[in-house]
Length: 562
Image (cartoon, rainbow, N blue to C red):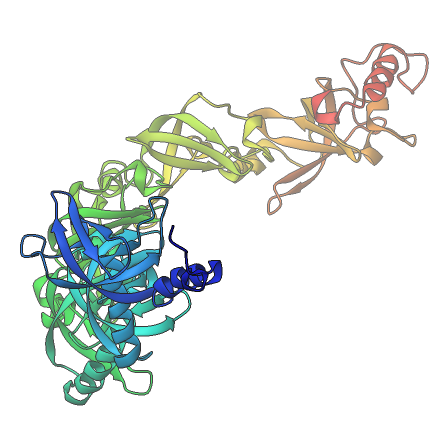
């Protein structure tokens, strides 16, 4: 029987110590070296000197085909033992860690690095600079970028903006490098360019007011007013993004570091010697390019436009809107009326391409000739009569009667009446024809002394009653006035107490005023009588007439309408 030496048996603490000593050199999150002991179809077993090998997938090796057994590789120890009691290791993470170590050793914030654009993420791009860095979308280019996909799989230089060691995060910028380079180019360009130089550039941006042109060093503004001698509504009518154009340097502001550019200045100003090419009163053809309420703009040559004002569109019609006559794109013929080369304005006439109907009318209907026409319109001062082709003549109220004072043309005429009149005056320049009705007959006042004498007894009909007397129509249409004081020997308070409209009366001529064309009459006792008045018991002429007057007064009807 053998005796066991208890002194040689290891204690539990010794056994635990051996286990601890087997793992004390393995720290999770560190780089360690290993040997490839077996290469399988899907990966390799790596001996890191631990009691079990670790497995690394095939896709973690950059050169899988060149990998051989016994090759030494660096791995990153993620976990000492996984659920299978194997160390969890990674070649990729080892490479990343080595890259980070190199980056932190060799690079600082502000350094320039090269990198490959790998893929898009929310807010920007991921860049491979040995480790993954983040490029915010606002730092991809100087201006806004329409499509970030255009940068994928391309290599650029970047500036390191920030390094976060704890998060292993790097923020990059391409824009800052471009801006710095552009500032250097701008400085160099400002030293060599001069006003009047012709430079090539690329259309970089288009706005409503112009376009920004990249002059390979700085941007210059090409204002819309400097693009063409002619009219353009928007810069996009002439330019497109990316176009290469030649422009002229118009102005250089070294303090604000701005350059103004011109495109139209490369060609000769078409307004020079404009009067020689387009003399006044000559006919031109052009295209309507713009219409405003007050007129139409016609392009008669590239860069040259003239205005046809609404007043020059028709001889006879009153045009209130140019769009009623012309439309954009229409080809028209017009006459040069006026040229103001200093203000670059040309006045054109459309109606002048046809014969002036007012001049034809003046020849056809000379002064004192007779015309016939239809009343087209009435105003407070006269009536407009159509003579021919929308040409109207005007009969003023003062030319409607020799004998009556016409306050409103409606007293004599109404719309649609066919009338005959005498041409009193024609002014083709002012497009005005004056007509008269009373001139068709003789003026009875010229022979008034042959018709009436003071003291004559005359008969007539009451045509108008006013507060101060009654108007009586005598022979030849001449009116006489019986003043309220001449109606009766007694005091008369109201004319209508004595006379009514339509009454036939006899009165005595007591005054004739040729200058004022007035005849005063009297009905006072012994001098006249009222043939229409009903017999009355007294001089008040009461009865039916008074009742009628009272009724009219209650209706508040004007005297001249009763």
